[in-house]
Each structure stands twice: as C-alpha cells, then as structure tokens.
Amino acid sequence: MHSLLSKIVQISIYLALPLLCTSYIPIGKLNVTTGIPEPGDNINDGGYTVKVFGDRNLDLKGTTEFETVVETLADGRHLSTLKLSLKNDKSEPSHTLGFLISKENDSGQLHPGSYKISKNIDGFLNNFDVVFGFANIEVLGELPFFAERGQIIVFEIGKDNLRGNLNIALRNANGNRLIVKGNFKAVRSVMR
View 1 (tube, rainbow, N blue to C red):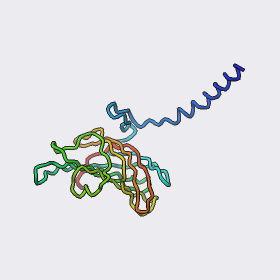
View 2: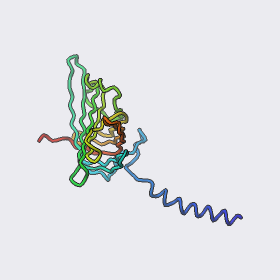
View 3: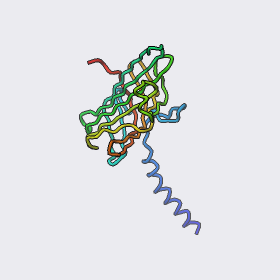
View 4: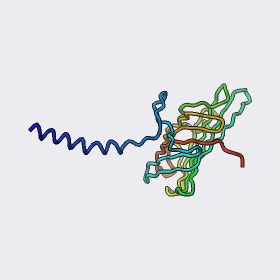
C-alpha cells in the first residue's frame, strides 16, 4: 500500500512539474514598491508587447512613442499631459492603441506611479486628473474600443524614454469587451 501511494506521488510530480515550468512566462523583474512586473529586457526601446483577451485572443507588438505637455492654467496651476501611442509594425495585424494621462500637479511634471482609468470622462473636458484610452484593432471590427477601467503603471519617465505596463478593460459601442495587458518601453516622439 505504501509503495502504491509513493508511485502515485511520483507520477503526480512528474506530470505537474512540466505544467509548472511552462506556465510561468517571465515579463520582467518585480518592482519592489508596487509588486508588479516591470518591462523585461525582451522589449526593445521604442517597442511594446501586449496580450488582448476577448472574443479573439491576440498577441500584439509594435512601436511606441510618447509626448509630454505641461500647461500653466489661468489660475497658475500646472497641468501635465502624457500621450502614449502604440502602433503595429508591418508583421502584425493592423492596430492602434492610444492613452492620455492628464494630471494637475505642483511640479508641472508627471512622475512614476499608477494612473487609473477615469470613470467619469466628463472630467476630461475640464483637463483635470484623467486617464483616457482607446484601441482600434482591425481584426476585431470597425468600432473602436474605449477604456472603462484599469491602470497604466509608469516605472520610469526620462527625457527620451518611458517604461511601464498597462492592464486595461475596454468596451465598444456594441458592448463587446476586451482586456489589454502588456509592457512598453516608449521613446519620445520626434517632430516630423
């Protein structure tokens, strides 16, 4: 009886071990402060990788750029806006994802941190503390998807680069939903 139990345990370990080894996909080192994986070395500067979960599951990659603007409002307050653009490269299905982070702050600069999707988009019209996002993915139809909830985590904002990840739930006008998760290493947009 003891040897039968031992054999069952051994077989279970042999069957479970490959599953455990293949189910872990490293996406980067763990950020000590947030506990969230940072973009790994497998992403080149100016690139991104995202997974799309919905009616169709997709792996997307391409090029990513960012722009920042700092405005001083009439009453002297500062408003920082970051625009993040993700676009397919030639080998990927046609897609565009875009995100705007707009935040009022004293320094006039955005800082690393977690930026949550705004639930009340009317606030976007007033230019205060808003995160907005959209996705156009050709293979999912003509209607764009707009961000409902989630967050963008910025690990580093430099003069010419921006590193972070995103975990965003989006919905289109027909009620179709999708989740976009991934990492990016954006480079500053160059005027063309």
